[in-house]
Amino acid sequence: MKLMSKRAGILFTLCILFAAGMMFLLFSYVKDAPKWATSPVNQHLYKGGELVRAGQILDAKGVMLASTVENERVYNPDENTRVALMHLVGDPAQGVGTALQVTYRSKLVGWDYLNGTYHFGNKIGNNIRTTVDADLARAAYAALGGRRGTVGVMNYKTGELLCMVSAPSFDPAAPPDIESDPEKYDGVYINRLLSATYTPGSIFKLVTAAAAIDNIPGIGSREFVCEGSYDLLGTEITCPAVHGRQSFEETMVNSCNIAYAQMAAELGPETMTAYAEKAGVMKSPELDGIGVANGHFSLNNATPGEIGWAGVGQSDTLVNPLSYLGYVAAIAGGGDAVKPHIIKSIRTPNGFPARFELDLPVDESILAQGTAGKLQQMMRADVVNGYGEGNLAGYGLSAKSGTAEVTDGKEPHSWFCGFLDSETAPLAFIVIVENGGAGSSAAATVARTVLEAAVGA
Image (spheres, rainbow, N blue to C red):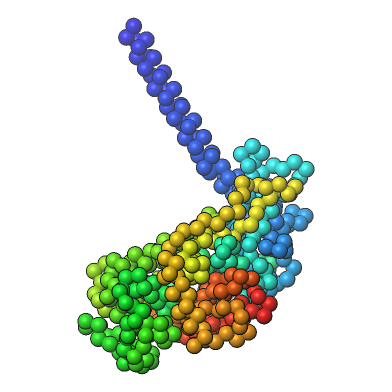
């Protein structure tokens, strides 16, 4: 009897282990089967390590960006378009980890749990239509003029990302020998809009201003004095110009370091950190499941001087361009942030939806409407009294520039961000030109060119 009980116990234990093993196998299959099936070792989909059988990638207007023709992967016939959109579409070697040919590989090859990668009638994968405008991307890349940087343009009402360009780039139809010219292609596989972080410089004053509007009583009637330098409890805060007496509104037009350092020190580390979090500086949202780099903002044990420089956008603060574009879009939208997206649709070769689609933006209120309205006024005054509108008169151009000092002795990074207060063109934008110098020149020039292309000015 004891022997039978012992054998029954062993059998029961084996059954439990078998069931656990089957559950683990099932879990691994559900979790990793798409990755296994679409691995480069699958000769049905790849040739020489390069993806050759996959559906089309299209721009917002239906322009072909990548496709499979006679078991070969081909790209848009225009070289400038291929170069401008390489970071969106991807390269044959799949070096750009955030590109659609990597992140949406299983969708492109049409993999599913029932049929795997087999398609009846020898049809090829699913087609992905993006929100990006190829013409606008081409104009943006040309405007960068061979300089490193990135351009992002977003519809702040729908969340559609209309332009995503990163430089340097290369032609995916004729990939160069990257190793032969490492300086030219430094960081070429990084999509700078999604995967890079930078010191923000004065564009961060939009965050400090929002905190001041909400938390410093009477800020609208406060007067600030700038004599070019200021001793903030032992730390020298410097300003590129002497602005004299200025109102709160004028501090934004003047982009006065001393005024914003004083505000930040008065607000303190907890309030400044809370508003940096509201702006998405520390944690970036995903872009349709594609990872986006997180920024950095920390005032732990910071001195008043360090808090002051952080409020100016210097110190060790880092922001991701796409994340900050979302903050600018929220200002334009009256305080409501709309989740950015880049996928318009995914459809089978027969035109049926390949995923459940709810084309509804996800709204999140990150600024009070009155606070956003005040920032809108200040950014508009920046353009009217400082940058100028050029060919964009009538579109309500509102903007903020930034000149971010770097530590390697090179020219500072050049930033320009803002929006068009326009019913016909509700566009938010961000531009960074690495080592481009003053934001009001290099990045602003790029932004104007791109916006003019967007509105047909």
